[in-house]
Image 1: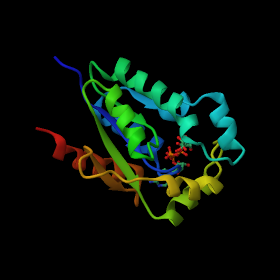
Image 2: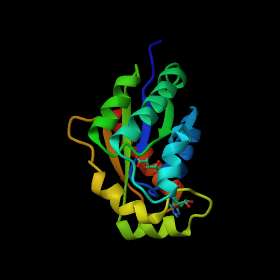
Image 3: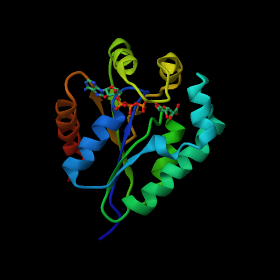
Image 4: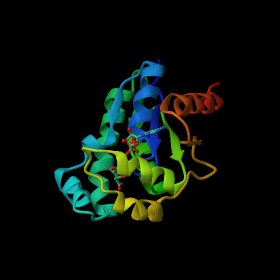
Length: 171
Ligand SMILES: Nc1ncnc2c1ncn2[C@@H]1O[C@H](COP(=O)(O)OP(=O)(O)OP(=O)(O)O)[C@@H](O)[C@H]1O
Ligand SMILES: O=C(O)[C@H](O)[C@@H](O)[C@H](O)[C@H](O)CO
């Protein structure tokens, strides 16, 4: 059997990548990785201080996420939550996954996402960085395998929506 595709749950901070990513992995019976866990400590310190990351900060992080995808995702598929705001970041992860990657872009109104971020406790990312996240965001382009999924509703509803959209990629 060849390498399996990895699902990357992407989107700006606070869209529910962790919440939905975990549920998706459970529904599919595959390993899950939290992309934030791969950030070098300096990146977390920067974001905690309210300073947006730059490309140079993100490359080592993306390479660490990509290494996990290659090692753990290859035999059976996997789900990874990682913002992947720019096309070039997604290109980097696609190149890392031998079985390919399909992106689930979680999208929603800024006000809804900001409200969820403001209510979240115990996380390093300040809601003040949301503007910079949207400024950098490049939505999926037509030639990128993936789906956009709206984050209105409950986590199980969003997960079902994502699973239904992903079925369009099955053959
Ligand atoms: N559908 C939902 N309805 C209500 N609250 C939600 C929903 N999805 C996520 N949340 C809450 O919103 C906050 C942000 O969600 P989560 O941490 O999953 O987002 P994220 O995209 O992984 O964020 P980050 O990129 O900043 O790590 C959390 O407190 C989470 O519990
Ligand atoms: O590229 C980025 O700016 C980062 O990956 C962020 O998106 C966060 O790690 C995450 O969203 C934290 O909450």
